[in-house]
Amino acid sequence: MTTAAKSTIEKLKKVSTATIATCLFKKGLKNQFIQNVAPLKLGKPIMVGEAYTLRYIPAREDLNPITVFRDPKHLQRVAVEECPEGAVLVIDSRKDARAASAGSILATRLMIRGVAGLITDGGFRDSAEIADLDFPSYHQRPSAPTNLTLHQAIAINEPIACGDVAIFPGDMLVGDDDGVMVIPADIANEVADECILMTLYEQFVIQKVQNGEKVIGLYPLTDDAIKKEFEEWKGNMKD
Image (cartoon, rainbow, N blue to C red; front, top):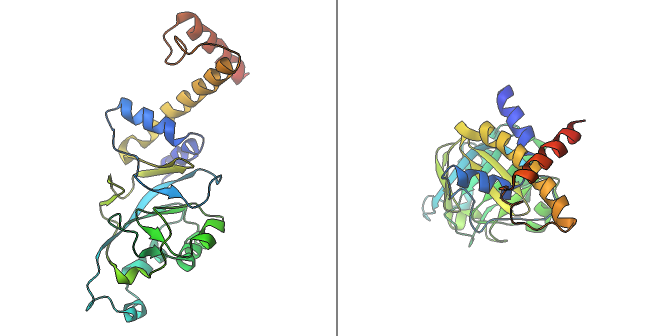
């Protein structure tokens, strides 16, 4: 991972998916929120990392017996062992949670290897165990059956769909209690910088609203007097 990418990640750890969604909408990107995917447990630190992808296709019985897991080149296992430290493993399960995309053993291995998080638009088995890990994970719903019953791992680190969002390797993924946003890699740092400023203004707005201020002119900022007040407030924050 480059120094620039690490810097971007640190910035994005300070902003919410809601702020990112608004920032991307301003840039014309309306479909960057992974649909029907939620954290297994609320309240964990913000997940940020570059996308490392795994794609499933529908399983075919003659190619997907339980014995395929003995193959050291089985792509699900390979992805778990090769996903880079600090990246997020994101799985295209075709929005099909009838069989698990992974379970607690693989999630634990990813955590121990320093991977930043795990996402599927399907489901996880051992979901309570995964939820208790010190490791952010996102799925549609719990699912007990092994992935082999419905999913065949077919490709690693190529463009995928996850929850109706196009995800390319290296895109930046940010997850919090609301869900997961996908930021195109080439604008990730630009978005991070803009979101830092947006977050600062949102903090100012919250204080004003808590003190009884009306939102008209304040949010969005259209009142010149409030703009001047914000600049002074921002200066005091730096001091």
